[in-house]
Amino acid sequence: MTSAVRVQLGEDGADAERVEQLAGYLRGELIDRGIADVQALPAGPPPPGSRGLDAVTAGGLLVTLGKSAEGLRSVVTAAREWLSRGGRVKRTVRLEIDGDVLELTEATLTAQDKLVDLFVSRHSAP
Image 1 (spheres, rainbow, N blue to C red):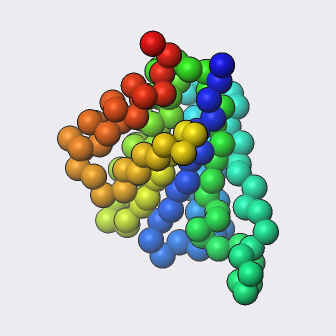
Image 2: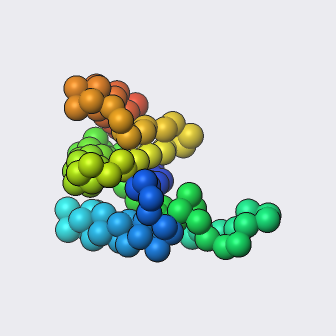
């Protein structure tokens, strides 16, 4: 059985094009780590009343994994590294599996470690 991880990235002040570019960088990093099935999430139709794509719908990736903790941990590690490279710019990263969400935006490194361990254990084969 496989699981799909939805990864949503954001960066304060970034437009949709910038966020898509950042997602492309993370996608390349995941592929370099041996995760073969990483696709950009389609943005879908814009919300009623909007003028097109916005940064909230941009920056999404769909990562298909097996049930191993190693693959999921690799995705989370890459996302945490991406988050840390933001410098003084606030970045957000949100991972979701079957409605279970892990958001690492402003958590301390210690809190991130605990949250990641819990998230990975819930979605790994026994």
